[in-house]
Length: 249
Image (cartoon, rainbow, N blue to C red; front, side, top):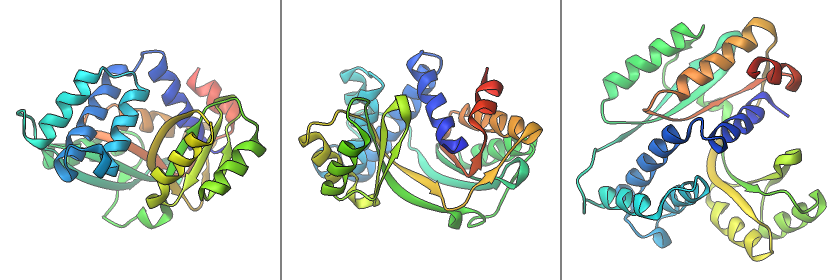
C-alpha cells in the first residue's frame, strides 16, 4: 500500500475519533457552498454537490447544517464567496504535492501555503510543475464484508477501472471522473455498502521515503491539511507501512 493511501486511512481514523471533526465540517461546508454556487442547489442535477453531500453524510453532519450550506451557495442566505485555487510544489525527497484550496483571500492563502512548504523542507512550484504527474479519478469506498472477487465482479459490471484491496478498511473502486456516480449507483444497486465517494488525484509514479525525509513529509502533510483554506492534499510518496505507523505513533 502506498504511503499516501495509508495517509488517507489515518485521516479517516482521526475524523472517526473526533480529532479533526471540526476542521472536517469546515472543509465539507465550504465544498457544499461552492458546489451549490457553481451548479445550483439541486443535487440531482449537480454531480459535484452530490459528492459533497455524500461526504457530509459520511461525516454525520446534521441535515440542517447541510441545507444552510446549500442556501449560502445559492444566495438564499448570506455567506462568504470562495475561490478555487490549486497549488503545486515539492516536499522532502522531491515528492510531488498538489494542494486544493477554497479561499476568500488568494494572497493570504498563497503566502500561507508557501510558508508551510518552506518550513516543511519543501518549496512551492510554478503552475504545471507537478500536476502532470497525477491522474484525476473517481474513488468509491466499499465497506468491509464482501470478498475481493465479489467486489471486482460487481465493479467490472458497473464500468469501474480498478479495485484496490485495503484490508480491514474494505476496498476502493476507481473510475473515470465522469463515471463516479453511475458506478456508485450500480454498486449500491448490487447490494454493496458504500462509504466515501470523491474525485481524487492519483500519482503515475511514486517516491519512496525513509528516515528523516519520511518524518518531514508526514509533518508537511499535517501542516498543509491543518490550514482552513486547504481542502485536499495529494502527494506521490511511499513509506513502509511499519515505519508509517511508528512515525504516527
